[in-house]
Image (cartoon, rainbow, N blue to C red; front, side, top):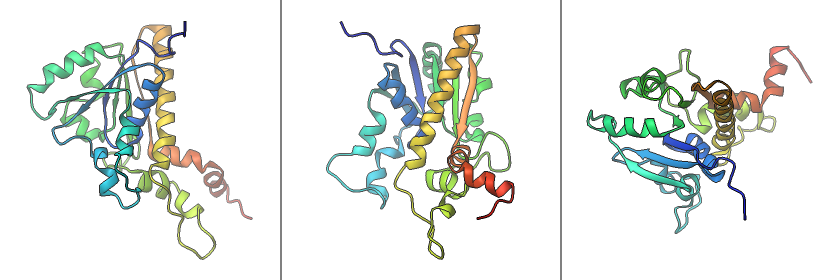
Length: 227
């Protein structure tokens, strides 16, 4: 008989929207995890991105949503309402991993910070994704693929011919690369829990992954290199 997928039995709570963080949950589901996605009453904006964004080719099938939401069960919770908290805490006690990508200030308002959820489930792997990192002056700014990953990292400027405009990235290129970094951090958290029994807070950012992607150029600038 075929062996079980490597993450069979792992329980994941996906409280994220758009692409990078939900794509990380998709990968965990591809490897066998049981993923429950929480959406607000208006739904994840990624449901509408094919029609809302001029960069997406149009089709009869909502392929961006299908691609980033496969392997998941769904539930709607209005986390701004106190009565949703009891249902959320039941799910938190069930989960091994929680993925969230609200900016830190929004997480605090919704009581979704690590400090809020750790007492509910101390073994939880809390995985956060931000645009610009958990600290610093831009910590609470929403970050997107084109702005945080490509523009702020320098990739847009690097992808140009001399005298020409910056190269425009295809949809979600930085999001998908960043998703794999988030998956890696989650797996490291699970490894730590296997060794110690403790949960932990792991995470990454779009800007950090953009800088990693163009690390040669960024490092060259830091040491005043030239051609």
